[in-house]
Each structure stands twice: as structure tokens, then as C-alpha cells.
Length: 509
Image 1 (tube, rainbow, N blue to C red):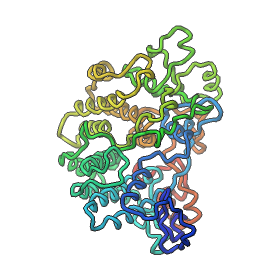
Image 2: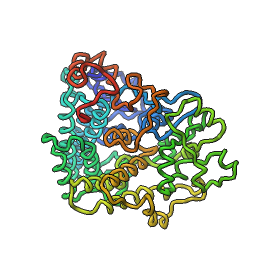
Image 3: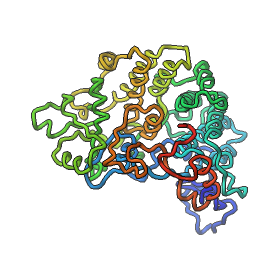
Image 4: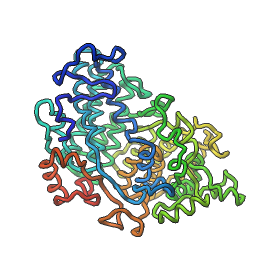
């Protein structure tokens, strides 16, 4: 497995490391200002942050993820590889969460908060493992976290078994939170409220289930049955529950805040985003972007959609750079660079839940409600999330409640055919994840091929297939170094022994 499990110290925290059998420090080496006693609440905080906080190294990594899903283009300093279909390796270090979650439950045993911490452990494991298996396919799962007992080279479970385990863990999390009490150590807006966490768990479970639509008939997963059971249970996010995620502040600043440098200040909005927003008469255009300076100079006002010229992300880098220098493009809105407490990081939301329900209703997975009502409630909530943005950034086109109430006209009105409705729902989910969770947007594109990502073989960095968008990450190099036999077995089982970004994982076959 990972080299993190080669040490006898199996639990890591940013400001605290528990050393039980590794070594003992003399008192003279103790920091009198440091916390020396671990607790369930401290572990809970660390676990939640590991899953919900952006873990990239810097603002460039944050933008790179958005390039992967074709939200942005770049034309200065250096090529943004993800924009041109370069995709790297996954990272299995988040699996340390398994050991931390087990320790958290141990510390909580016998306390009034035990069930809540059990629910958090089950959800956190499911959330982490889901993102990893969606990146690469088969992963170490059932044997992960056994380093303390000597198993430092975990075998790989099949993706089908991993996904079944994830769904079972989410069901367990729901049951634990149903019996839970308010718990300590929660840095999210939920502040340890088990009822809100339970609703978020079920909303996330619906999202996972819909992402498995290509395997909806797999008996082992029971996708449609599980989906209907959750919906019929009625414990879902409401429009006043709030989101599961993190608010930014002077302590936890937005990843782009204060990065007005050669890279971030020249980030271009893609035409995929601007064209979609223009077609919908969607004022998020003015919240996502600043107008092209060239268009303003030619007399186009900043509140005119024509002032917002996006870049084709498949265009040659030199062409994009030339147009950027000529100020032809709309750049990302300066608020992303200036505001410390920018848009919150929203990982599980009512808006996305409703759009998931809308698609499930169109597909016939559920019979409650109408697809139109789900669609409209989801979009309204997505738009309402921008109401707190300072109006000085929105170019005279604020999103107001009156605007939201009148949104559903023209192209934004719910379509009449199922095919058009699915595209419409997919488009709204894509817009929802702009500068939020672009990796999920990539997963969704991979599932439904909408919106259509541009592919230019002349500029593509996908070495093995210039005409294709890659479909997976490579396995971490650390696995080749420390868990080679199990890695080779997994590669042979899935991909003919070849670790390639174009190989189809079980979910996509």
C-alpha cells in the first residue's frame, strides 16, 4: 500500500501527531503551547477538512482543476496542461483518513456523541473512496488502514465491490446520524447538527447513485431501488438546510484570493461557459467574468452579453496568447482574486440534489414530484447562492429575487422532450460547479458527454489519442514503489496491464 502505512505512526494531523509506540520524547522536547491530547472532535475537524477543503498546493492547482472541465483557458506564462487534455496521477494519501476515522470512533465510544461520530466516519470514508475510485477504477478498499496490524500492501478491490461498499457505508451513515446528537469539531455551517448531516448524506448518496446510471441494472448495486428508497424516506436537503462545505474567511481564505499575479489575473473564461450563459440569458455571466477590454473600447457596454468573449479551449496556445494580449477575451471576475471570503466551497447542495432528482424523474427512477419542479427549484437555489455577492462586481446586472422568479423563459424554460430535458439538466449541473467542484463536472461529462468538450487533435496533449478526452487518472507512482504486485494485478484485471488515461474503467464499460 502507500508508504504512509510503512511507519508505526499511523495517524497524522496537521498540528498534532499521536505517538503511541513509535517513540517517546523527553519532557524538555515538549512544546508547552501545543495540544498534546487527541480527541474525537479534533480528529473530526481534520477528517472533514481533508474531504471538503481544497487540497491543491496553490491557486494554480485550483485553476488547473477548472481547466480539466473546460471552464477556463489560459494564454500567458505557460500552457495549462489540463486545458489541453493532459491528466496526471491520482493520490492515495487521503486513505490515511481510514485510520483517523477509526481512531475518532474509538475516542467517542461510550459518549453521547458516539453515533454522530460513527455517522461522520462512515460518510467520510464513502466520500473519500468515491472520489478515488471515480478517478482510477479499482482501488485498495477493504484492506485499507491495516498498517498497524502488519498489512502494509493492501490488495485492490474491484470497482464494483468498492461502489457497493460505498453505498452501504452511506446507508450506515444515515442510520447513525438518525440516532445522533450534536457533535463537536464540525467546521462546516452545519456545526455538528446530525439532522443536517443526515440530509446531506442522503443527498450525496443520490448523487453517487445517479453517477452510476451506466450500471443501473447491475444487481449487486441495486441503483434504482436504493435511489427510490432514499427519496421515499423523505430525509433530504431542504432549501433552508444550507450546504455541506466550508465558508471562506480571513482564516480560511479563498484559494484565489490575493493571487493577482501573472497566472491568475490572466485566466480566461471558456466559450463553453459564456455561450451557455448567453443562451440562457443567465446573469451568472456577469458574476463569473469581467468584460473584454477590447469590446468595451469599441463601445459595447459592460452589461451587454456581447462584451463577454470566451476562448475556445482547444485553440492553439499562441493564438490564445495573442488574443489575450489584445484584450479580446473576458477574464474571470476580479472578485475571485480580491475577496478573501469569496464564494463558499459547496460540496453537497440543495441545488444539485434537485437537479439530480430532476434527471432521475426523467429517467423514470422515481414517480414522486415532477421533473420540471425539481429542475426549477434546483436552478433557483443555484442562482440564489449569488445574492450575497457585492453588486460592485456584477457589471450592473445583479441577480435579484425578481430576476430569479422570471428566469424560466426562452432557452431556460423546461423542455418538452426527454432528450432535451436531460441536456438542460446536465447544462445546469455543469454551470453549478464552475469554480466549485470541477472534478465532479468532469465525472459528469464522462458519464453523459454533455456539454460537449471541444477536442482539437492539433493541440491535444493526450499522447495516446489526440482525438479523445481522457477518462481517468493514472495510479500514483507510490503504488508502483510500495505495492507493485497488487497494482499490477489490478492493471491486468482492468486494462490489459497498461496504465493509460484512455482506458475504460468498469463503470464506463
